[in-house]
Length: 105
Ligand SMILES: [Zn+2]
Image 1 (cartoon, rainbow, N blue to C red):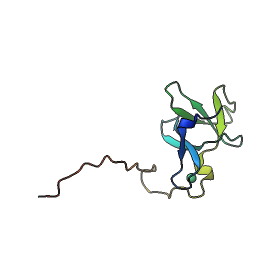
Image 2 (tube, rainbow, N blue to C red):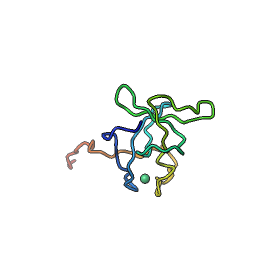
Image 3 (cartoon, protein in one colour):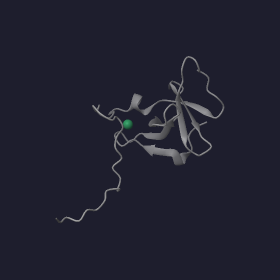
Image 4 (cartoon, helix red, strand yellow):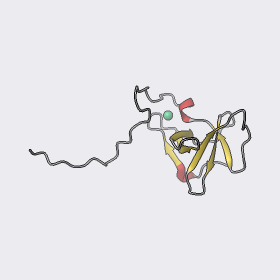
């Protein structure tokens, strides 16, 4: 298995092909390298809702189940990982959700 091509995204820092997954542990977004990687330590699967989910392959559960593929978290290979922040952690998605405020008083 491998991710469907419509899941392909690009890392903003190194332009590598990645896919955004939700961690099955806590639902956080995590970038994973697009190409499956046998050396990776996570397993990605495509949920029934069309979302990709990622879980860490542990010693307890080393098996890759049907429908999953082994992959590498992008942070492990990105040549320019995001800088450490003291608070928060995730990058803020600054989309166009800013409210236009009239410049008057
Ligand atoms: Zn990158």
